[in-house]
Length: 594
Image (cartoon, rainbow, N blue to C red; front, side):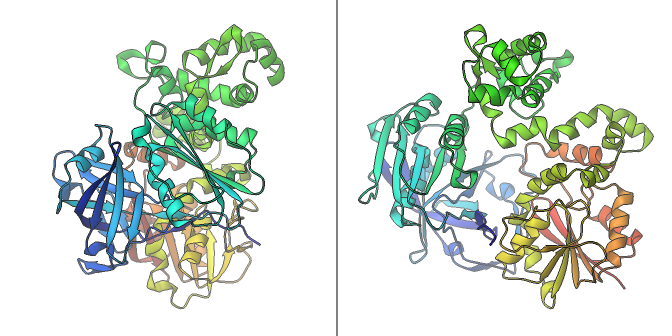
């Protein structure tokens, strides 16, 4: 029996609401009650949209504000099924948890921490009856396990709306153990506790990681099946995650930890570079000529992960350099060269007194941070060293650096292909436009290919469409779809034809010639095919300018827009019937064979 998926997806709709009233919950929390016709099903510009739904206690809606006051220019484009974040220089977005949703009265409650800074808090401070607010979401809702004996609800004051909603609505019958750090008693709220529940209030400044970790460690260990939910400042949660997973031994599917905010102060600028975006290094040691950052901090962090330094120090704080070298099986003289740099960049601290993780090292324990230094993303970055000669020779930097195309690489390496599958997990939130398309009306069988196949399976299931599914992809490692509600059979290319083929991000790791080969092969299987690809950068991403560079590094071609995809299709004997915008720069191109 397949495991339950962690999230339920929702259609992404741009909605307008107005302020009905403002309430002071505590001296530290302001509640803005919103309402409007857009909370019900409505029609705008000829497009019908469903009513607002936010069933999860920690759902997030994305508020849209404008630094220059021109909110209309900041709004994204509404697609029939999704949102396209068009470029907007002054757009400001912030995520907030609905404290209460009352569809009977048409009201949405949002709680804002009163801290005197930030665009959303400033908006709430000036909000008056009749003021408008635009928002998008939620895109998904957390699915909790059906049977639990207890749940930890951990956070700072920003987590109180989610914690309060959980206790009010009780999405599952489990004893709740609540832990909240607050700056003072003025932030405490009345909570709907039941017999057996506990609540612990801890005085600590916002973002105090040591206080939060100590309080979590002091929680009792309940008997039975449990779950831990936590939300606070992102760095403050790193030791909490490590404790719950490494020491409490809670499985990954029994822990949900979300950084609700990020403290901007940087006590060690180099640490920010070493565990940040992968560009690495501010400060003297990481600065090159003309102010261009040096790659040295990034390479040092990568070495620490590859050698196992970060995990070893996390598991046994206080190790000496000699003991660490013996444990890792590396010569101590070489480690002695590395450790001072790791200390400079905040990966470790302590030196002769015993090594411990620094701020950057704590962040490197996170899977998504680690991938920037030791996963597929890191390999692409290293391939950029061959960008200039690759450009001259007309090949991809990846091929020049590795001796094989990226597609050839992942075909031989199931683990690497698995990383591509993980990168495509967010695709499930964008596929409403595809699953709602009329092409599925008479489809009984569907052939899937590409690392986004698992997301297509999940989206079809969410939409109630259950054609007979088959996987046809030489690179697909066994089990990449394990854990999804529908489990397709894996077949080879000798199986019979299908009503439709969906290639989900299958072109993103192929050269043009390899893409043509795949499309030609699909033409022998079906008369209808759908290509799901990113055709432009994500308009909300701070790294949007890098998208084309990453695409070229991987395939030797820029990020393929609609015209480029159509050209590849025509070379393979396909006609482009239409293009369906899915949002976030992603499109579904429907192809037909004559």
